[in-house]
Structures are given as C-alpha cells and as structure tokens.
Length: 150
Image (tube, rainbow, N blue to C red; front, side):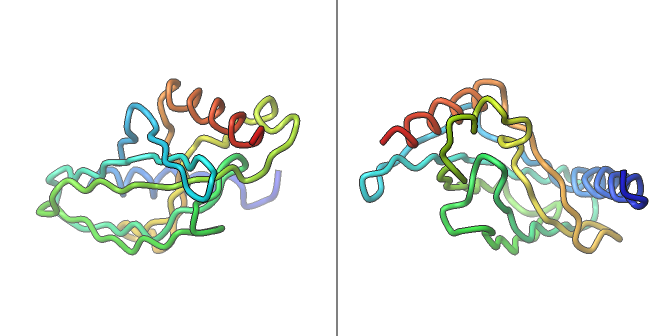
C-alpha cells in the first residue's frame, strides 16, 4: 500500500460526507437507452437534491470507469453549484463501454460506481463514487454485452 493511501481514502470519505451534507446524488432505478449512429447508448439519470443545509458544493466533473466512458470522452465537465435553494436537478449521463473484451464484465468490480470530482468545504478537488442499484448494475452489464456484440 502506498504511504499516502490512508490519508487519500480518509480525504475521499470526508469529502463525500461534506458534499452529501449539502446535496445528495441519487441514480435512477433504471437505465434508459437511445440509438445513435447505429449504436445503443446507455443513459443514466441522476437526481441531485439539496438537503437544506447551509453552504454550497460544486460538481466539477465525472470521468470514465473501468466499464463505462462518458459519451463526451474521458471526462465530462459539469461545473454545477448546489445550495439549499437550488431546485432538484436531474443530470443525464450518457455512456458507451470503455472497452469490449471477453472478460470485461466477469472481471468488473467497480465499473458501475459513478465517479465524481467535486468541491465541498475545505475539499477543493475531491473524488468520490456513487453506487447504482443492483438492478441498474445488471442493466449496465446486459447493455455492455449487447453493445459489444454489435
């Protein structure tokens, strides 16, 4: 384990808690799909809901996972600020598989954890992941199989 690993993990956890004190991120219970250029694109809606607590947080970006890549490329810039007075916000994340291979799904461990870079309190550029439901995880796996078989 690298020498700074515990500090990094602690900062990620504390940063996520600081973010979630102001706003929560809740993935939709199911994926949606759209055909684009003959390929099926996966769409995941996430709802960002302010908690009513004082303060502000910023979602800076989302990035690829081992299984998924934003349609925009390696990183999708967001630059969204949330306070107690911000209305519920639905953000649609569009994905294609990050790779197709015979073991891509069987070897997956964190590919459906949605990564965010954010700013919350004293955490200027922190990173955390949001888990999807088991149903959405299964839908992602089924879709990757379909996509890669095309």
